[in-house]
Image 1 (cartoon, rainbow, N blue to C red):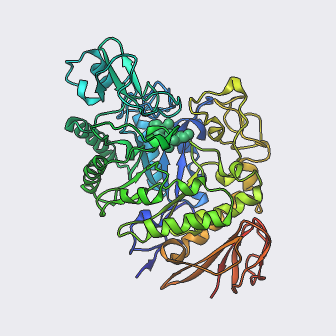
Image 2: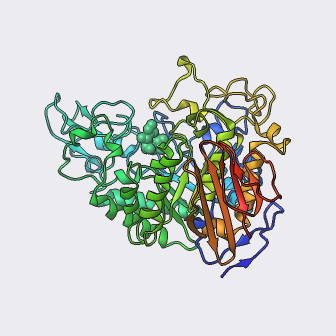
Image 3: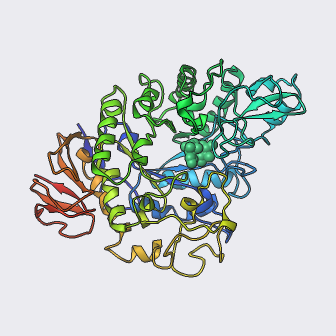
Length: 526
Ligand code: ISL
């Protein structure tokens, strides 16, 4: 069913290649936000060469694939999610040669690389929109979503993200409204126009031809709009339309994109950002094996540190995604849009240590966000340093690489304040401390790589007290038990050897039967 192979990575740990599952079902993804990861040239913002210089950290940790947030030319109204040219690199981050070097450096380490595709909207400075806006008769006019009306009444009640105001902006020069699910500087493309699909497929081929392993697709559920543009229902009051758009049209668009990647060899991946707050709805974006390979599923990210709430999230994910033909879940606790999970769960490192057992132990592909392996909390951002229109600066603080002034960036201050305790909580210091959360992440990633049961095995709950989540992962190769305690100390009726413990205690020994509050264990029950 599978064969053991030594892979030639910088890591000396033998790893196992399971040939029966596609790579992305076994993979652990690592999200890099390029502005905040590392600089190669002593700048307050990171760059592609800086990422390349720090790739050994990513492979030492034991992840399999990198997802790079946008690095394309951009006016940065949304820090790169407002793309002005999909086929180039912003000078802030380097150039296409720097990209090619980074891609080659990833592949030398057996790391896959996904780039972020932003197909729902462009920057208002993109040549396409400049042309579209220039005149109602411009051939590109219909590449965006325009509607007639009077300048004081938008075409419908849709709200934009971040501003909380109308998703329509009046263009005085041409006397029509244009749609933007996000900032007015991010006009939505009109995917009902086949020329848009053709152009964006060209963008995909541009990166696939360079050798990328696939795409994380931004706001993929937003692409198809109901041509009637119906009002959002009153009960959704306050939610931006970007969290509600869920139309049949979008599934056609995704099938078109899937065909583009499937035409390439080597299992190129589409991992979609479906930001709908229902796992049942998210699941539909896997289609019949002809839409997304993987989708983000955010309801678990929004669940508090509470065992019964988490149990429900796991059950929903199992029911709607894992049990769906071609469904394979993903798990994510932190990203560049949300308060880091350590901060969300109350700030204790102990909880952050236990939480990674959910990410790496549940059935599905985990997506880590750079810095969570350091147990980072959100940075405290004074008002005068806030820059994001969506208020998401805290989770985007720069990665501290060492404890010296400038934390490896060569500047006193980076584009955002350093995260808390950066003098002690940084890569260099935590690497020297075998008991650190960083080493815990690494031990757990190593244990996951060594166990096909943990990667792709079946999932079954173990009957335990309410405050504990415990489950068994099983396949022909063996079994693993994972347990996470979100409440009072409790009895865990499992025997076996502790492989990894969230507090590092008792690893290699027989499990003692009691799991403490905010603690987690990985057990080999054989
Ligand atoms: O960030 C959010 C709430 O604070 C989400 O609603 C977010 O807008 C949604 O997940 C879509 O996010 C993606 O597209 C946005 C961009 O700002 C985000 O950074 C990106 O992840 C527009 O491109």
